Amino acid sequence: MGLLVTVDTGSAAHEEIAVALAGGMDVVVLDHHLFDARPAGVHALVNPRRPGNLYPNAELCGVGVAFKLAQALTLLEPGCLPQDFLASVQDLAALGLIADQMPLVDENRVLVRRGLERISDRHTVRPGVRALLEKAGLGHGQAVTATHVAYQLAPRLNACGRIGRVQAALDLLLTRDADEARDLADEADETNKRRRETDQRVMDEAVIKALPFAERGDPGLILGDERWHRGVIGISAARLVERFNVPSILFSLEGEESRGSARSVPDVDIKAVLDRCAGLLVRYGGHAQAAGMTLRTRDLDAFREAFLVALRQEPEHDGVPEAYDLDLALNAMTMQEVAQLNQECALLEPFGEGNRAPVFRCDGLRLSGAPATVGRGGEHLRFRFAGPGQPRAGGTPALAMSFISFGAGKAWESLLAELPGGRAALPELRWDILFQIATNNWRPSNGAPVDPVQLQLLDIRRSDAP
Image (cartoon, rainbow, N blue to C red):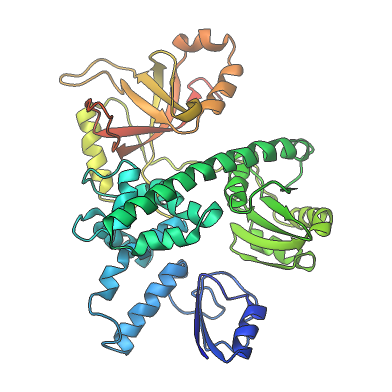
């Protein structure tokens, strides 16, 4: 009958594989998800996380495993693929590894770096990727980084599969026609806008539902609603983890069966917790930090109780939000020195999971006026600080520079509410900050000059805080 090759799925798909085998098909599974038992009858199971695996890199995602299969074919069956095939798909491998948030270590770094080089080169970039770059305001010839892919390209591609036409994302990556690419990029961009709106609505409603459970000290959150789109519940679950710092599962209630998506805190293996609740689930699978599942809707309350019991059997979660590792404390620097430091940091690219960008600290700064709101709805803030010390020849006062803080609007308002004296006290206070340095790719429509680097504020506290 033929050959069925799965990518990024199949390790636990016993029923589906049995149907394919009964139809006379050979089945090859390319996957990276955890599983308990090998599906019976598969021709091959290629999974870096399978029991007994000796391959040194267990952090490949589905597209990485597919790339390794192609690489093996070129070695074992010379001529079975075009000579330049592996080089031509390195960009796809990079997109997948970054979008699936795989650690950028080991050979993943090599695959991503080479893929980003193809994406950055106007001679090798795919028309669809070029169109996405232009949509994201990155079509100015600058080098594309893993951060650009993670925050600009991947969300637009993923949105098509979450709430739009998944075929649009595939066609966008495969098309060789520039006009078709622009049309598909427009579709992906509009779909992503709808995805953001849907995600925000689900998040707002989920927070309201979560508060009673959080206030009573539940070690995890399980919430569901008929109106929640299954395509965004994973994103919203991750944001709930950030908000409440406990493992969280959101369900899209869809009649007799409901789909759920789980996200966890760093020190809780969500897959291991689900293993202890398996009797209440129709099916499930995933990793230590993320999982998907299906349950009978009538079992939601029972599953919640079983999940909480299983969580309480885990080593106690320390309750401390994920901290930053400081790389270097800075005092006085000119903007020219900051730009030089950014060039040196770029040598450590690609940054992402498993290889974060360096984090810097500066203490004792004063705010130069109130932060300005930027972005849709004022969710981002721009701070300007004046640092301690005297102005330096050829430069500015220490760190008399502006910083962007993404998504910090509500957190800043909460901090102000706790200040004795509120906003009136700001001019007298000193602040300690953590920040990262990145290349500033924003180009204003009026052509006004901008700083070559962007200082991204990660965290802030009063210098006199305990």
